[in-house]
Image (tube, rainbow, N blue to C red; front, side, top):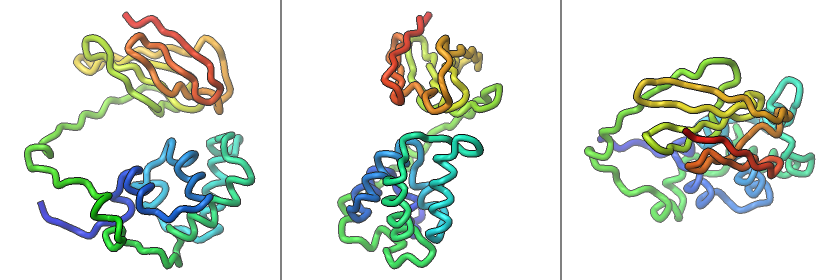
Length: 204
């Protein structure tokens, strides 16, 4: 395996949290944005100027044409936009190569062996619109519970062996902002992290 230049978009969330400079905007970034996004795509994968970052944050807050995340306040916006421009802006003076930072050696992953890289990725088509799995939790017989984010308002069960998929609409209709079930236990019960509402599903 050949070595290449390490970019911010190559790093994990933990590495980014370790290496990026502390700031109130950083707190918003890792407690709000990073609960969904990683550095790889939406954050470090694209360079924007300050207006561009402000538009991106506005899209996340927009309840009509955007995502409608209610957690991001005006105060959060005024903290995170300058911070994103400072570290990932078009004209940012912050290092574009994290390996140049003094803390990188401690933050980087250990080398992966060739054997460890012999992994198989399997894609599963999820029918219907808005199918954005927030979480996937295996339980008995290898089946997986999926909690869908935002407007899908559903949970589902996936059998990886025969690719059978069965979706269950939440009995209590909630707003798009409340539709995320954060996690599921092996009994199929979960917590709605947005509104602290517990849900239970009988796992057969």
